[in-house]
Length: 524
Picture: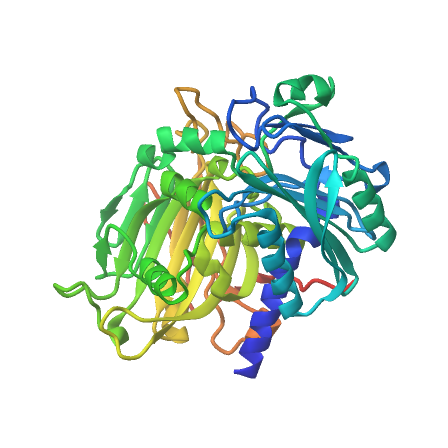
């Protein structure tokens, strides 16, 4: 138990630190989406240049200190109701960073700028920080701001908040260098407010339209109007083989299992946790994006449920496959290189916002098979179904890869670890033909082609198919070392025969290779 708890803490630290620790290496474009005309009426409406952020909704501009060397950072949607306006970060060793958000406070629990900062400071003090400056107020360009300053380890930050147009504007300025924090604070104190109609002229000719680090309100409206999930083919099942021609996928699940239209475990866990905590597992914006973009392709259960929908615990087993266009999540980038630990961590951090069960995974590994990169995470979860007297504790795993612009997610669940390993010894094949219907997140009849993995189109000569495996961890392999067995990938044609993971003459016990664990982050 102590070992599992230690592993859990290590993984949480690795994923949680990924956002800021990796930011110094991020070279994102100025806008997280393709530059478009700024719509009217959204708080994210802004312009961004290397030297200045100009908000067109609230009417203010913030000039960055050049020595901070800030670059825009893409982020997943927040878990709470904040609207993310700006996320910038600089390189090591200073790790300068700026985050600006807006809370619509009218009629909400948090009623004003002072209340929001008071709650934030109390939470920081509870977790253990050094308070450098208590909650106070100041005036910037005629607007009253509340602020406080704290230090946690080497990281030091100043939080400021003011009220604008029925919103609370919150900015966090942070760095590992006290002098850089002072420079950021000094730059923010020169914030200028102006009529919003003057935003474009104030931004300058080098500024580009910018709609924040996460999915913008404008983009969300487009996804809701034309949900990409509705245009996705659900595929078909023949015996124990699932086939989806649109995605170019063949998958063989355990024989004799009951095929269902949706999964059982994930929604049951979400219902239970929301009931216990009173908080949703996903933020409202991320939930809307997932609803518009993610589709469950099939779910196979070991035992068909009773009339009341219940399945005996010991007979339980589930494999659920879902897909969503990666273009729905422009700030979540699937790692093409299984050795790129930073890319894997950033990917898992982003996925955890749209796939809440990812936060329960205590082990993360990567491997390559059939020319594809896979990310595998495992863990265990506890939850109660209605009527249960005791909690159910089950082993779960997620296997993720990308194909034709789709993010494919296999969810495995079983009562025990041994049964979970058996489920993950799966057979999956992919078509590699070039002329295909690709994953689209297009709106209003404007199709958007998603690049092939790696950013380049596949060769016109590629007409074969690849077959690979979801990894099956070795029974005696200690989790702490990150070891997992992976069946070697072979080349075949799933259109004419079932995919296989084995070389001629091999059995499932022979010729297996080792997966690549995600390396641990070295302390700085």
